[in-house]
Length: 226
Image (cartoon, rainbow, N blue to C red; front, side):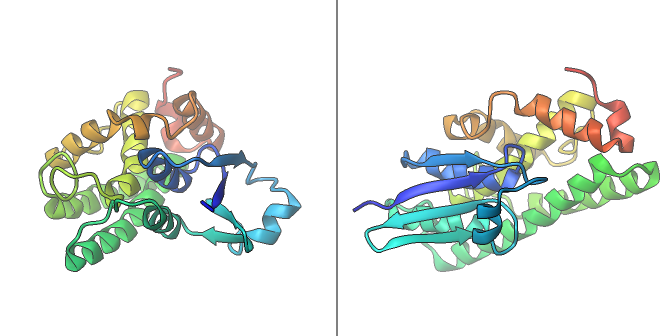
């Protein structure tokens, strides 16, 4: 029996999107349940050890198990649906895992950049983001994808971050990829993929802009209504 998969999601969460991209890329049947993280249902509190999304409910003949952490969910989905999206070389695979972890730091810095009320702090966060992107640029293959011309799990992991950078550029003109041409090309390639396009709700950019404005940070003043 193929496991029955149910992904617990919050529409704006980039970490959930990582898992959805892999599920879409591999054409895996799954259900998705959206919750409000500001007011989560009791059943979610009981199954999510960290109180965060994504959570993947996996139902088999033996019962239902719960997985959490986006990278773990990505790898599980990849392992049960060959062929693998991981590099064959164990060293490259391990390096990819490390750079996936590195990407979470960029996402957290981006959150501070778009939500903090103090302009100087926002500028400091932007500096951190750009420095980390230069480090990532140095590790990138320069091809269409991180490791070259083959889509791997690391590409799915970074697509949500790059999508939000695209939103920021469109909404306020701040191009965080202006100093990293390899990453800019990577972003264009990933944004064109059906598995990335179909991994989010239709109005995600508007929802993202609304979230930033509701946070009432410094960057909110620069966001357009588009």
